[in-house]
Image (cartoon, rainbow, N blue to C red):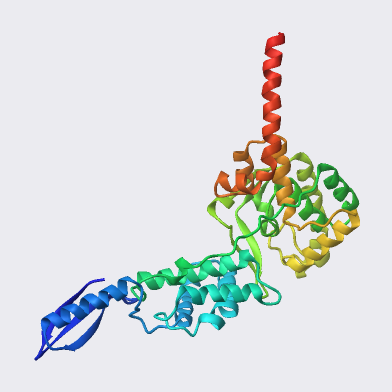
Length: 377
């Protein structure tokens, strides 16, 4: 920060530049009442030192007001589901505990105490949730720092809890066959969802947003272009998670057969509902054409797993199962990454690192076999 001294009448004063406001106009803070220029210069140097050391803020804004303004801006730039998450975390977790603090008073230990209390509550918040809270708070504080509202970000000095690495639950090929056999006679729409999840690794929201126009039956390709979610009770079709999530997925013959069979089933429902059918071109829809509720899918999923007598896994674990089995079959990680819609291959390698040791062993044996065959020929 910069400052300078000047004379006003018979007294000396100094002024400090404290950043810019939301309209980009320069903000200054004045300190007056010094008898001599030397006295004003010493006071200016001391004040700048305090600011640079993070001991003083030039803002009267509270943490709660900062978060409120930050949310208003975020609402214009993020997906509704993301904004809903941000708003809920600010309202439930951050604002009640530190929202009353003036930005000038917020210290790292205040934030650290908040995280400790959140982990001690009943039920306790998981480390992953604490990290999400920290990311939101730090994002808002970075804005305050950029605007010159605070001299230093107090969240930088906070220690975060480590997230324990979650062991991925995946099914074997035998378990998948058992699951599909046990559920082949269930409602076509849900069986189709399960087939797509198992054979393509698509996310739940991507499957529920899939349109018939997204499927190229001649080339056996599904084009993933959007996702689906319920936001405050309203069905919303949104852009995919990242631009890498927009992808084309090759499908096998059996997936194509199931999709065509399901389309015939859906055509019967259209005829039955006639003018009451709301045609959104959805592959998976309720009998009247409207989107399936996530709670309904979750209920059908649990029933299907129980019907097959298999160990319970999350629906999302079908995506992990798809990726893990591809890697175990020797499919290149880059291909798996593109099929899943990961933003880069490192995400795939990190998520499915449990598969890599067995792949390394296979490579070692394959190479040894290659050399042995060369020597015996």
